[in-house]
Length: 114
Length: 115
Image (tube, rainbow over all chains, first blue to last red; front, side):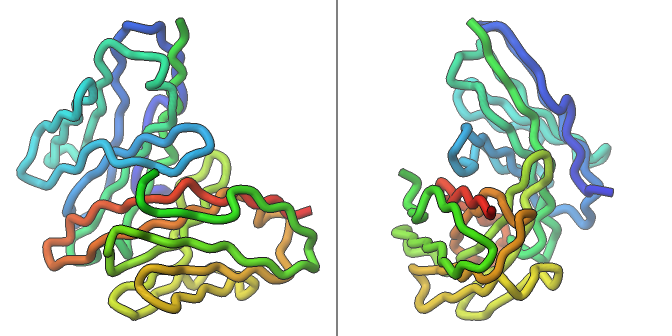
C-alpha cells in the first residue's frame, strides 16, 4: 500500500472557482511534506514545503495546510485559472532519510475549464 | 527553465538499441537523481548521487546504468530495454544539508518509448 494517498484522483472545475485537494500519509517519523505542480509534458515544480511545526503555507493562490496529528494535508486553489490545469503531487519525507526516501502520491489531476 | 536540463526530450528506441539520457544542472547542487514516472503511478526513485556516493533502488533492472562524472552532470545509459520501460524519466537535483528539508528541482523529463 502506498504511503501517500491523494484524493480525488481527478477533478474538473470551472474557471474562477475554488477547489481543495487532499493528501493522507502514513510516513513516520515525519520530516516534511511538499506539494508539487506538474504541467503536462514538464517536470514537477515545487509549490510549498511544510515541516512538523507548520500548519499552513501559501504561495500566491495556492494554500497548503498540514495536520501532523491526523497525518493529513490539503492544497487549496483559490479563484482557479486555466493555467492551474495540472497534476498536483504530494510528497512526504521521513526523518533522517532526506531525499533518499521520499514517498510520492500518484497526484491529483486538475482540469480547469472556461 | 528550472536550472536542470534534460536531453533528449523525446526518444524512441528498439529493444536492441543502446542509448543514453543526459542531465545537467546549473544550480550548484551536490546531489542528483533519476526518477521514473509511469502513468497513474507514483514517481519511482531509480538512482541517487549524493556527495559522490551512489544510492540505488534495488528493484531497478541492470539494463539501466547511471553515470555521474561530476556534480553537474548525470547520465542514464539504456541497453536492451523492454516495452514496459516506456515512461517519463525525470532528473532532479538538490542541495543536501543536515536539516533534511531539501527541495528537489526537476528537469522537464525525457519521454522514452520502447518499441
